[in-house]
Length: 332
Image 1 (cartoon, helix red, strand yellow):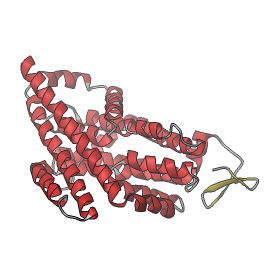
Image 2 (cartoon, helix red, strand yellow; image 1 turned 135 degrees about the vertical axis):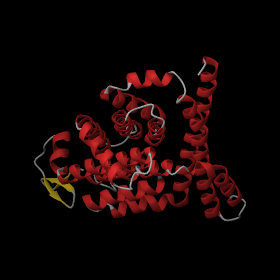
Image 3 (cartoon, one colour; image 1 turned 180 degrees about the vertical axis):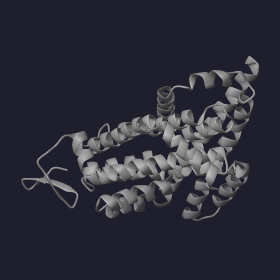
Image 4 (cartoon, one colour; image 1 turned 90 degrees about the vertical axis):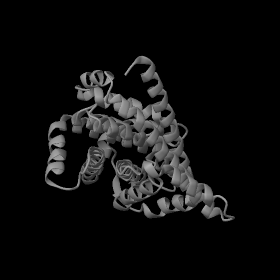
């Protein structure tokens, strides 16, 4: 690919990425607008214990497709005292699983219907019904998101034929480099979904190996937590602690899986070879994202009391309905 051609392709990619992120944010906001207050009440009421809190995080994030959005809601609820710090932590951990469904959406190549979806959303906005208007906004956002993917796909096709791919392959041999790059890109984009979509396409065209793609994915999981730091700037101490535990969870989980990268990739290849679960390379990354988050969450859930105490420091406390009480004074 000549320099002028690459600049043109890069500009196309940048434009596609902008459309993708705009559509993603537009869809998220529209989903919240449909039942925003109900979502907040649902989170506050259903997160009664650590299991319910975990499931709540999964369900809500699957619905609004934004772990950052769920984190912002949790920070507000914990700061206001409606939710305890420990409930907030488990909702955030559950959100990591809920957001994995987006990668499967990318893998099914729905982008060919993007303009039809945008048009459907546009039509719904002409009805004199607020709920239909909000649904139309959701469809418009989804269509724009898919349109952005479609635009970026032309860049990936040209990238596969370029010499730049050789530099990517050379640099991508380091696991830590992949993890770091994934973290930085996700933090800059404020979207793990956007980063993982890029990773899916790079792996699909052979620009990166499976270990590198997984390393990038692990980094993307960590990078998206930067948004939670911003949300917690003016929050209460308990809310900030919830956010810090979530960041530590993603950091430690990412490092552990970087160490276990070879057997993890072997597991993925085994699934692809011996089952019909992974029909294409994009689905492979989607499954890697989901399996990692499920395994990390299961471990955290089983040992959450010990892990949380190690992260935030031990206190002489007893557990009672997931509120820590010390000398009859609720401290969270």
